[in-house]
Length: 162
Image 1: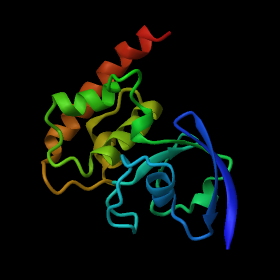
Image 2: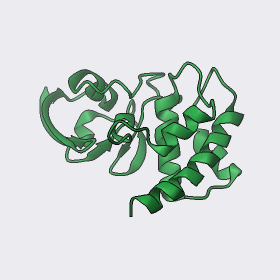
Image 3: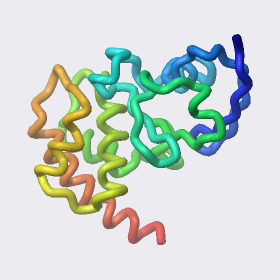
């Protein structure tokens, strides 16, 4: 059985027919071609599929596309502006906080969500927030340091955009 859905992804509206069982992660990748959201464990453990739905961090492998009907979705592709990396993305790159890159989109979205709620997080808050994402390649020390750097960069970036 198919359902008609309409949602906004990274500022663009999409209307599609989807099967009721289509996961949001598969919709994003296969139906609209946004492959930055990765399919990892498909059970909500790794966080590689993390996106924002109406501003809340969700694992797109645990959400059906029909559940996103009428929602605003932001993927990792939606964070950069005019070809420039978002401060969170740039901080991770500059801090050597990634290796193979598979988990990176999920970490970027988790960090973005954290810093939107808590602009100056403690290390404990960072560790707690990032516990929902797994990285098999790099140590978390660089990632935590990059989050602290991203928080600082965002303060300057936000001042520049107002």
